[in-house]
Length: 389
Image (tube, rainbow, N blue to C red; front, side, top):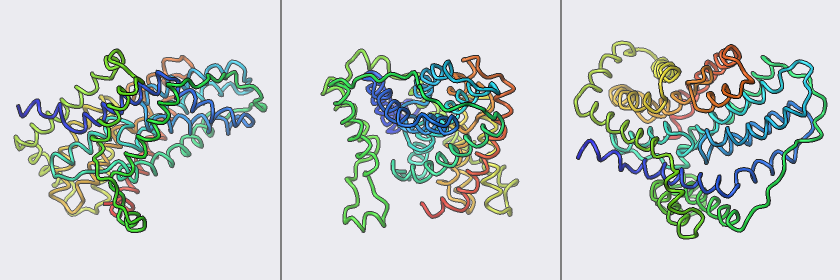
């Protein structure tokens, strides 16, 4: 019973609701609608066009899987590369990498953006009873997303400079939004509003005279699922297309983490880590946790890495002066922050499979971005996040 309970954890329901919403968005071409609306407005400077593709991808990855958003945006981008002539030959390379990397960055900003973020919230609720709201997580993740999107743009342009004339044709065609597409758009907007108004930050709640509706993110996800089925936006056939393997992996990760905690192994490991971090500045401990999380996720599944490291990080925080909330969020983000190898994240693998980039290209750009991403996470965790909890 104890081993199976985590498979029905609220965080699993949260991600299931997010997956179903993503299915509805993809099924009714709402993702293409968003992409067209943003990209068609800007078609001049090639460097700015790359940034627009990145911002669009990051936005989509906040709400649907970064795998789906990468696949969609790369389909559009590869059509564009057929009509763009770059004297340096780097345009196709930079557009492919920028989309994959911005999908990874975008997924960090919400609880439904990537699995490790939701797992961090789940472990915090199970181990210390602390619930991170949807808006609360955005306070941690959104600054990293914004900073990383700009950083990725600058770094890629520096490593792979382009020389492209003004882009006048995008070769991207708009699909009309159907009636079900309009219904999906309404549910999508309603979902975002429900998620971010669950429990408002104290200053905002006082200013509005309303603390929020009080529903947890997982309950909102359940409401979303009911609305999607009740309005016939999705049906039982779509339910079979949900990412059940990921949900089982997360349930298994939560179960494994619980077993490590109950067995006392987590406490033993955190006590051993205390020998490395004891007496050192907090930023050193945070840096060690971030680098460890990022390092393991380069070679292993980020979900599995988070499942093992999160209970250890929370236990370490409980025995030091650093908040376990901060260390859990550091693991949730750092285990999904690899840009260097195709095995690091699904977007990386998709980018590599296009044949437009080599392993050397990914390592050259990804190593710099891994270092910068870890540094940004460490600095924000040390100096900004303590004010958010």
